[in-house]
Length: 159
Image: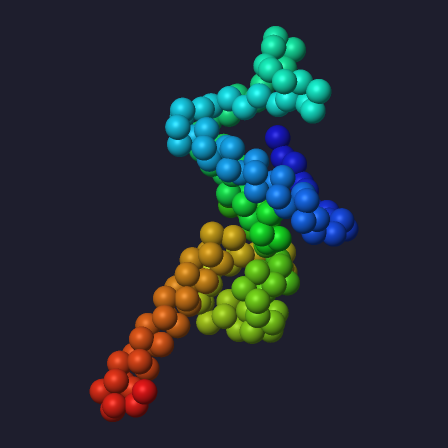
């Protein structure tokens, strides 16, 4: 089954009160995972004080609960969240946006073979995994270049 959620959220970021609630939910999930290795979450309404047979219960693997906790934490901090299925292919416009570069610059990288792509008719498609790999490679290269500059400045006695 394939589901596409390609809608831009028009709602404003979480209010301060909502952020506090989301952060609290994150802490509850993490505490449950840390202490009891919980795989179930009971959902109580404001009027309920205890769990009974009518209380809705979500049973999820711990990995999913950790993912939910990280997602809630990001939401509470006002961060943007992007969910993408494994193997997702992006257009050159989407890929350029993901890398925060212009589309012509991305096209140059594709032509130079720095990022793999495939043709769909006359259009190029790039996998999300290849973009993440390229982004990681570039980050490491930038970090190494910065370290080289620091080493050179120390050798020359420049502070």
